[in-house]
Image (tube, rainbow over all chains, first blue to last red):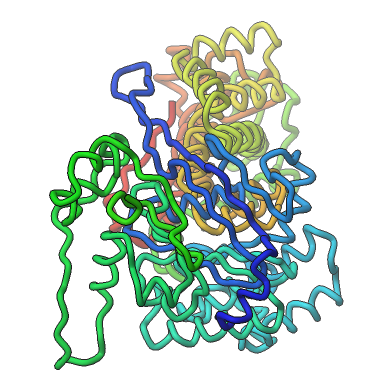
Length: 337
Length: 285
């Protein structure tokens, strides 16, 4: 959301450093005594950095591990392996109390505004709860802060007395945003914050997020399943496939010069608002392979249209994520050979 | 909203009115009674209903109508208190099992299974015999043996609710576990629990009646509907003096029916997806 120049100026300033993060979910077999028969490798060794003040986009198909990534990054779920450094501290080393204090710094906005607000609590209680839990404000001061927050997200103070079911999807998402903002966090993970909303409401919410970023100097990890939304909000974009990072690049660079064949396919799926314009549509064959048994070598080789040209190396060796210049990283044998 | 749906349900309202009458009659028993509850009067023993004794007298010459009013007090209190006891146990254990899952869940659910496997009456009779039968021990025994259903119900609710996004949001904020359980999940899990508790009052009254009938519940001279009914053990009373055992038996039947009607009404009012009349009623032990 900030300009490319601004991002470069802050390049050295890393807020979140994710190193070799893994999250496996055990799959238990049938029978009377459940035995673990394998693991769903939702996130399988992902490393990247989020710089202070930027919006880092994260895209990929359903089931590629984006959401798990976001949750493990906030330690809502424990990782199987790896570290996340937040302002230089590994958050998985923190004890319960330290972690609770750190929650002030990192928040999350959820995908489904209908599920993310407690139906039995008033909006005032929902937004006021973080203030109370962290001892920021109580009583009158809390009410005042809640009204301020409602105002910031474009709602009125009388809304505080109402219940979530009295609001529309877009309004509910604003309530969710107000709750995330209450503690003045540094990082907000936006987990597909607009995919459950009408298109006309989507842009409103995106603009709100953008304004808030400018006003409060927020850093976003913006998770989405298509490149089109991520395109105009992100400074940098990471592309995930089956729990692995395939490509990370500044947004402009990625759109003008996608290097990974999977990114190419995703790009070609962005609709262009011009019916006369024809372009080559790359259709991916088949389904996403099972994350329990990901393909050997490069995980994308089973659906890659260049695989035949490149040869057996794709099936045998896992390509590392390599810097190819311009802050552009890609994990593909074809590009790095 | 739910209240409006409840009021529209005629059977449920009928149950509610009957319950209110029974509760009022028990509360104002001293005002409504016309004789001493416990004072025997052998000269007037085994009299059929008359102007003096509306429902006649029992084998010791005590007024059946008076004892029925006081017996209602005991029976309804036992029902309520026993259910309160098992609500506390069941909700707490169920919430812990469902929220934490894993090993904690397995241990609690295996304990629940064990308690469920043991048939109610043999164990209740044994416990009552060991603890000495009394009103309080009857409540405790029913309470200690009845919590398993509520526990499973609450656990199931927690299993589904704990992965809701608003619970995750609470964790992201840093809300402590206890507060997540009681403030975020429990209020959303209460509807079916309240229904089960209401129905549970009915079955607790029945359990008390059963224990008292067998002589291991409420003891003479304290009357309860159950121990008044036990007079019918004698063949002479059963055949020739129906005024002694018919009224308490009828009241047990009416009270449980009323509680069940209210419970079903609550279930339908709180869960609009349920089609009317399709809900199957839960019977007592």
